[in-house]
Image 1: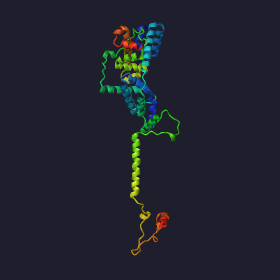
Image 2: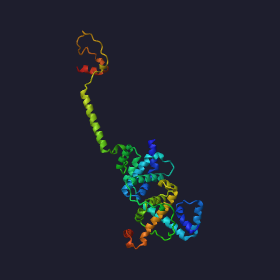
Image 3: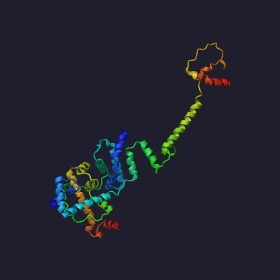
Length: 186
Length: 171
C-alpha cells in the first residue's frame, strides 16, 4: 500500500516539480521559492489521498502552493498594496493594443515587469498564460468566482503590457530602470 | 461582432473560454479586421514572451532531491544516496562495489561489534563448562558408599560418553 502510494505520487506529482518551482520563482526570490516548493510537496504528500486520479494534478499542486503562500503571507506580511474594489470587477477592453508595444523584450526585463504586477493579477496571469489552466481551474486555485478570474487575467495582461511599454513612452535616460534594461541587449 | 465587442472578449477568445457560437463570431470578425488581428497577435506574443521568461529557471538539484525524498522511506533514501555518490555508475560486479555508510551508522556498527566481542569473551571466562548431568536428578547414593575414584565414575553420563572417553584417555 505504502509503496503504491509513493509510486502514484512519484508518477502524478513529481513531474510538475519544475513547473511549480518556476511559478514560485515568480512570486519570490530563489531561497523562498525553494521553501515554498518543498512545503507544497510536503503537504501534497501528506494529503495525497485527497487527490483524485485522473484530475489535473498540476492545478491541485497550485492550489496547495496558493495555500502555502497565503499561510506564509500571514506569518510574514508582504508589502503588497491591496487592490481597490473596483479593480476586482469588470474587464478593460484592449482599445489601444494595435501598436507593437512588445518589442524584442528580454526575459529579465519581462520578469522585472511581472514582479511589479500586483500579486493577485500575477497569479491569474501566470496560471492562465504560462500554466494554461482553464478559468474554472484558476477559480478553484485562487478560491474566487470565475468572473473575478476573468477580470484578474484581463487586468494582469493590461498591467504587464503597460509596464513593458513604459520605457518607450519616455526618453530612455528619464526612465528609472530603463538604461540598464537597454544595455542588456547590447 | 464589431471591434468593440471583439476587444471585450479578446481574453476569453485567446484563452479558449468563449462559447462555440461566440468563438465563431469572433473568428469571422478577425478574418475581416486587421487591427483586431494585430491586437490578438500582440496578446499571443505577450503570452509567448512570458512563457519564455518563466521557463528560464530550473529547480536546483538539492531541491529536486529533497522533494524526491519526501515520498521515499528512509532505507530507500540511504540506498539512493549511496548510489548517487557512485556516479557515474560503474559496471563492477556487486562483490567489488563500494558500500557507502553514513559515519554515525558506521560508528554504531563498530561499537556494537566491539561490545558483542567483549561480552562474549567475558561470558566464556566467567562460566566454566558444567557437566550435562546437572539437570538430571542424581541417583540416590547410599550413605556408606565408598569415595569415588576415576574408575568408579559413570563416564557414560557425559554427553553419550564422547567427551568422557577423552578425559579417561588423558588420565
